[in-house]
Length: 203
Image (cartoon, rainbow, N blue to C red; front, side, top):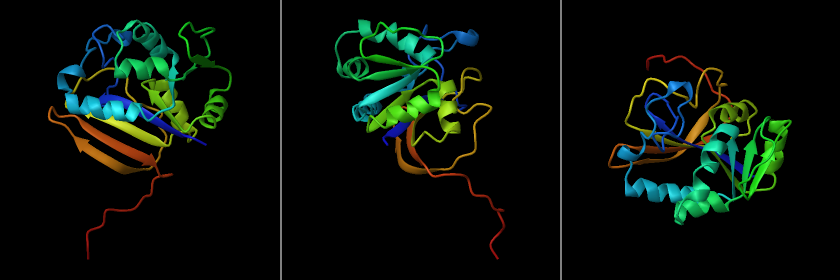
């Protein structure tokens, strides 16, 4: 079975909503769209391209798919545009009936079962954004890796990756990088369930 990675851009207080543009996603009266670019730099962008270029497919929830489909097919050619438009993409949705964006497959019905089957067809699958879908996959232990980009901002409101309902899980850090404008890139691999003990002083 292939590896499924959740890739998320998030603030220090865990907000992941609308990093890419002012009008990307106003759901919940969110007013802070476009927060990522001012705290990004060329080195972090190159590292992102390296990560995304290692995927052979990616997965989206319905809302994130609608945002992507309304934007990326209409952008000028470039390395990131080629990745987003060229890779096979899967959309998990109970309401979407058809997709006009070439290369899109809709997963409906039992999402957990279909994502598991999709992992069997690809070596490396990335999940972009899609907080609700991420929570579902975490609950069913379908997530193998967390690829987290954390930025030096507090927004106080917005969608969060690790919101109420997150299930206990343990991860081990496999990479950590810091960038000039304050971003931290941390990679974690799934390691089962948490261990518990007391923080007793040394004797």
